[in-house]
Length: 278
Length: 337
Image (tube, rainbow over all chains, first blue to last red; front, side, top):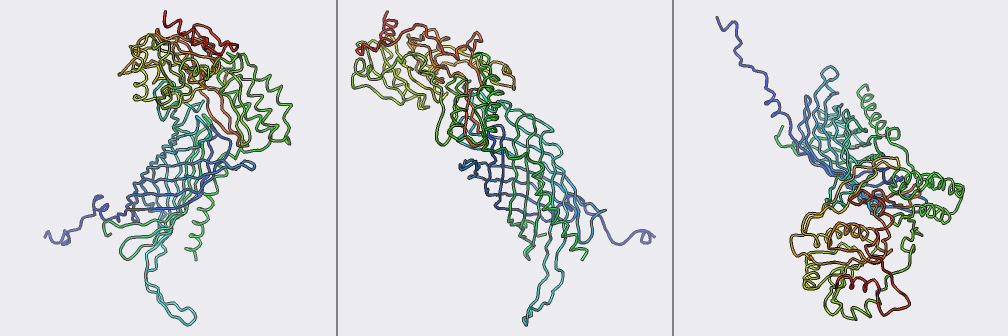
């Protein structure tokens, strides 16, 4: 009698831990080059422009249901210039970032081809500026901690079957390949800025008590922060992947004191090393 | 087709977002127009310069005097002269304008006679052979009774090796002369490395405060600097610190601090001031400027020593007699009696 009421198959839904283990895990190593513009209106009226180099490393877990990434990056803009009349002025900046984000599938919007995800991102950037001509204000540092809302749409462009093609009189086959294009966007919801107070400079040197963040103040709900990323990813037979990206991001401090702003456009190449053969 | 249309929308959205920065970011403020640069410099000084009240400077009136001299087609050389003259109304050696072709300055040391000539000291006190230890030039004078130390610039090179050598050499003298005449300042860190050799207990020596808002009297709460004694070799006997109008900035801070140190005495002329820490900034045309944004105060919270730290004993050189340095002579009289 029990055999009529109960299935012979022992089926249990996967736990979140098991789902997580099944999700592909990658080490994502990225390099790139771009163009950046920045101003620090507390010290200079000029806009500096440069071609920084970008490096980053992260752990990325991603499948159709969920994506999470923990990483850091370094943007090095060592030869930035500003033009004023016939004169050229030099400056440099570094941007050191730590980030963690999570995205979840939106079932209502997603389909077989298009996958929509919504989530959040914790992001902290330390931006260092150097301009020796500004004398005692030659060094600047800003910290931008942000909680951002994240959105991502991925279009599956995979070729699932062998396709036979002909070019002039040459016949060739295209093998199945897994690939996609995605657009991600992060907008700051809770933006903080740790920046110099009114006079910009501090007086800790006169007190024989040097502090790197001398005469600074923290402002919450201050400024603006956003980024977008357009990615084209191709997965290899060995489960690794290659990715090309165009990334834009912008930082702007609030108006409590004079504004600092930085915008970056970069082209990046990533190698995604699969760690769990999923 | 529908799929390609959606992919195209994704690409377009990506491009559209990245061009949003023209709406998000404030526009470029660079300008070669003379009026823009004049207004920018006047405004920056107006909200951040720290000594308007003490020096009784009516900055609005000064704008009325200098703005009629500005016109947009004026040559850079002329614009520089006008802006430089306007900045000189602040009467502050820490106020400068710098371009690729010129640098403005305020001649603080020309407010009184020259009171220093190194050749007089070499010929009549040190002779030709004296010691050089880091930034210090020194030797015995007055038949070995006094140690003379010339410190001409705050180079940031004072360390335990060179200053230990100097002070230990003169440890058995009756006193020291530390000559800060025509020392235009430099690295602030040297102030503490000198002074902490002459105190045995933690000693409050001055206050400092910084501009905290756009009003001429908007300052932070004064913060005191407490000088901690050096943990190694110290000199406890009398020290005569020689000053003149060329004693400026970090040298002036050192002079101010000696007022709180019992065995140190200032001899010579009033210093050139420079007790405000200068900032640095860039005009819309790229020229660099700096001006004072802090005030140093005595232990009575008096900011007037920006006009010069007065000596405890006034003395001046007699240029008609180059066989002696009257200020050194006065110091010797004080130290040997």
